[in-house]
Amino acid sequence: MALRKIRRILPARKVNMDGQILDQPLPFDGLDQIDPFLLNHHWEDELPGGDHPRDLGVGPHPHRGFSPVTLVIKGEIEHRDSRGNRSIVSAGGVQWMNAGMGIIHSERPSAKMARDGGELELIQIWINSPAVLKMRQPNYYPLSKDDIPLYRSSNGLVEIQVITGEIHGIRSGFMATPPLLVLRGNLKAQGKVEIPIPEQFECLVYQLNSRIRVNEELTTHIKNLTWFEKTGDSILLEGEQEAEFILLAGAPLNEPVERQGPFVMSDQTEIMRAMRDYQMGKMGFLVEEF
Image (cartoon, rainbow, N blue to C red; front, side):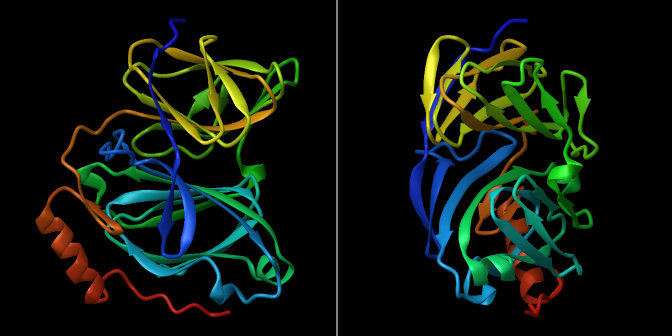
């Protein structure tokens, strides 16, 4: 296999999202997207306990035209939406939502976490939808840790959850449309893995902690997003210390993108229509019951 060269390292910066301080490596300094990936947010918090869930997390808000995907690293998060879905996803699980023509949802720590406290850590990714799928019916997939197949190296130094896609013969039961490769990996010290990447896919690796040696040429650090060139068919990762990472890979859509707040469409007219439809209740209603 030919290793892809590193194109750019994007260090995460702190951003304030409705009072929550998050780490954001994408968008970054005029780089609005790495098609089809629009946004990467990393949220870490220590909940003190003694709270009510209605006072925590993110309350009801709409989306249209893309897939917001939440990876639960620590703690547990409760999802509710205007299509009647409600679930709690714990550490190691994933909430995958295709917003389609429009959906209203909330994401809050579970009642147990709000009451008892504890560490909460999430990665949220926004993945653009092709224009032909932006107005499809919304759907929501809660994946528990047990739902996600695991690749393990023969020496036990590498473990990788295959959230969607396939590596080394391990194939996810959840397949995104269009196809993507989304992985969550853990490297022990000196744990090494070569990951095949389809030639047409963009490829990004976000590092949650520690130090990772990439392609035996460069060490990346905590909260770096590594963006690779599209030439080559694999990348090589090695843990200098125990390290966790998220890998995102997908084919560019090469379509116009117009973003405003929670809506991602193809032009300004479609954005205005999304705002109107939300105000008219066409995305449904969400009244949270605690």
